[in-house]
Image 1: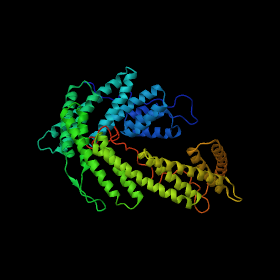
Image 2: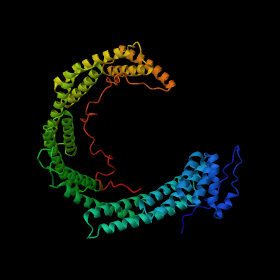
Image 3: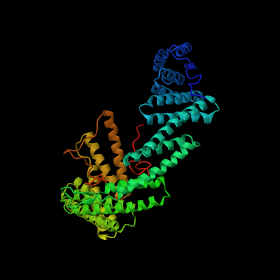
Image 4: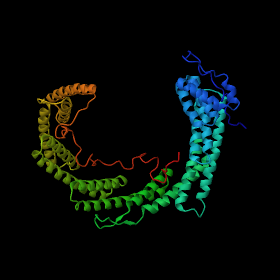
Length: 517
């Protein structure tokens, strides 16, 4: 039987300091070899570490250091040195380093076997990857021999753990939650075994058996959760209406979706999934309507917008699951109307109060007002009045930005260099926003002029080790910067729900368990 081995050369040091002579006395590697073979690897490692401090990028020296660390069981340190040797060395050094990395990964897996099976599996798979790369490049028998040994060890471990989990899952006294976990573990192990050795008949059969049993168990538990009638009691500040526990229903649907991924042609799973989605769409739509009722009791626009956006997200989730769900469609229209109305009211108030403020505050308030009008118009595209208000507000904003930029471009009689930089930054921001709203050659020329002046000032400040300072009164002339409104970034675009891969390869938390390693 072929066994895994270090290789006859695994502990053979390389003449590390060949080539051009260094400025210091080169380390003589030759006498270190007998020390390695006679159990004095720690002393060798110490000498090599000292030499590396003087020549840290010597690939052959790094390779020798990796071997010495390996010889005394410091496998992590060995990998660090071997990684650098592979990166810095020529093709021959890189190949030898990769072979030793495969050995070190195997040893680390052996060390972790009693305490962390996941790490052992990951280490051994990485060991196989290193050997496989070498096998593709040459007919060297040593990588092939070690590859076969490690693969055999890994297959034994995977199949034994898979069988243990499958047996435990099928015990009558095993609770359903634990049964699901055991079946998932068995499926993962058999799948890994089949990937490791695609021709292994036990792995093939076990993967299919565990797949089918896991799909059936997921469908059973997912159906139970998706058909839950449990109600969530309202909080003190909510409308006094109990609502379905849509989170439990959502978890159940996710489990059935995973079952469908495992057995895509199973008619029973398809039916259960459709029923679960309908149930979830009903629950999400009901919850969205409760949120709309709560919004009417909210005194502040910020709170109103937050609650309505939550309702919008809920109903869009419902339509993502069941696109033709009529109650969800009707609710979405109602949410959009109400959301647009609250935004329009907020925009009207900002636009009305803007003229009573300073020029900086005016530009900020008009920017916020324009943002609200535009969002409302996107929600209600047929309302021409919203478009008219947005156009009028933009005209006012352009006029205010132009005045602000012209004022900030005027140099006062006395100002420090820091104040000048702050003033020009405000002018640059105002012109940039103005150019974005209504591009023109005149604005572009002003922007270029201000930017050139500002670059010169910044360079002078940098040479003096200084920074720009705020304008007197504590306000930066940055009010012209395009704001995002008091609610932060708009949340009215359709949320990305159930994006494939966003939560991992599966939909349910059960199947997307966190790995130990």
